Length: 331
Image (cartoon, rainbow, N blue to C red; front, side, top):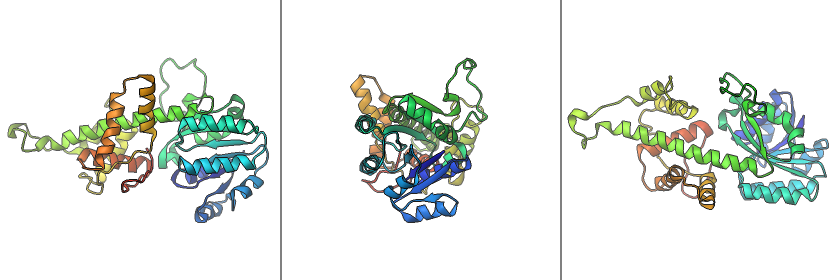
């Protein structure tokens, strides 16, 4: 397929590389012309503006948008929709609020332009591992773009099949899923990120307890000086708490056991807040996810080893750099 991709940052650029490796043609655009130039030098077609991008794509056009959520995404998709024709498709692969997706889809439908929201998980490792895709779309639009989703997704790989799924069809085992109508993809991704907050917090607190096993407040005969890098590595091998986040934790600890290169300042991108708000709206108890969100708020005032662990994990899976208050960089 021939597709356009806007936003060539950490994830967007790597998505272009995975698509071209998979045999697709990609025309790229970014407000930073150096990002465009880099991918043009790798063999992709570049565009100088949104107008130029739309002109270079064959009808029906498909454009994947990977820009920061909020106003940047809103401005970009609105401009694209104004340039497009009936039958064209816009895919928002960022971390937009699902209610904005519902609104945009209804608005663009009047013009005949399809709007899809693709919750995208995979971080800076996606170019090699693939991206887990949660796609909200009409049946027709999803079917047209399925070759793109299939290429970006991880595929079955070496993961053991879940017992009982032998006779279950669908694409979930391939790493991509049509979750429902527009808005549903980012809704599922929102809850995914809320869960991510909770899992990360559990690891962070657990390793903080291990690190402090030798503090003076503990009776001397019950003090232990524990090797955290070795424990993280041990748990990767057959433990029930093994996961990719634990893999990244082990990586961070072997690089620097004290995590002194992290301050413990932990941002939140919005999905955690939206998940908690959804839980309140539905009257669903979500104590762990809410607590994990509040801990991130507190981390901006005081820093524990556990918070440094959260920073380390965020950097490892998404390349998120610790910033000062007021900035926002991801999940």
